[in-house]
Amino acid sequence: MYTGKARAYTNIALIKYWGKKDEHLIIPMNSSLSLTLDAFYTETSVQFDENLTEDLFVLDGQKQDTKQTTKISKFLDLVRKEQNLALFAKVDSQNYVPTAAGLASSASGLAALAGACNEALDLQLTEIELSRLARRGSGSACRSIFGGFAEWQKGDSDQTSFAQGIPSDHWEDELAMLFVLVDDGVKDVSSRDGMKRTVESSSFYSGWLETVEADLATAKQAIAEKDFNKLGEVTEANGLRMHGTTLAAVPPFTYWSPESLKVMQLVRSARQQGLPCYFTMDAGPNVKILVEKKNLSTLKNHLATHFSKKQLIEAYAGPKIALIPL
Ligand SMILES: O=C(O)C[C@@](O)(CF)CCOP(=O)(O)OP(=O)(O)O
Image (cartoon, rainbow, N blue to C red):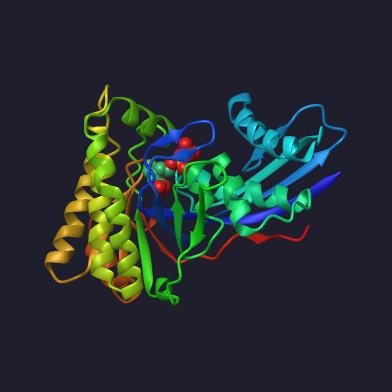
């Protein structure tokens, strides 16, 4: 029996990964950049056991159905093949996210699974090799191997597509992200399905590809210069461009709800009143607001009359993946 356990934190893209060049290997169309956060993480253990007759996936204490287990089994097959291992495994993932549903990202879960397998089978992977393995589980997971700012260089093959940490002189410790949970309960298109439909059918997608690499360069320059407004402006613009592509998909779709638009408006009004803050969104209606730590309470007050305390979750820069001794 081989066992391992790891904890990985979720990350929020400031420059988005949106579209795959290769679905099977999960090679992206463009490079991306994220901030790992401390508020949400997943602890995953894996147990390769000769007594098991099939893979078992337990998430937050619930045995998962075939669909979810198959996604995990596909990932385990990668590791089994590489190690010439014929054992089934039990994967046990626990998401540590605030009560609000829909915040647990697959990024932290799959990154933690990669780390747990690395430990269980003593693969002795480097961080880059671990990032490459996590990427095969879920693209954004490759960024959660690192703490703080991470850049996923798109590459053009399994070997060359991985993330690395961005030197930032710990500037990320001066930043914060305020999650506004506008759970409208509407079942969204998953990020995987959303980007597939967009790449295949959106006439706006070429515009995305024409601008995203320049956005990435601007974001990296902003980090080097510790220029908050420059980072915030490119984060907000890049997120809007990504979401813009979905409106021209066939059939068109959007992740934005009326509540999402309300938050965007409140962020703009806060800025007009001299409070630097910028929003970004992913595959759901919740809005994430990038703000300097020193301005976080002022921002929360600005939103307090519109949203309950439960809907406002603050997060700070988070650490890299950690092994958990069993
Ligand atoms: O995180 C970002 O860069 C932007 C997004 O969150 C925007 F929604 C996409 C994340 O996609 P993911 O869940 O990693 O897809 P997978 O590779 O199909 O598993």
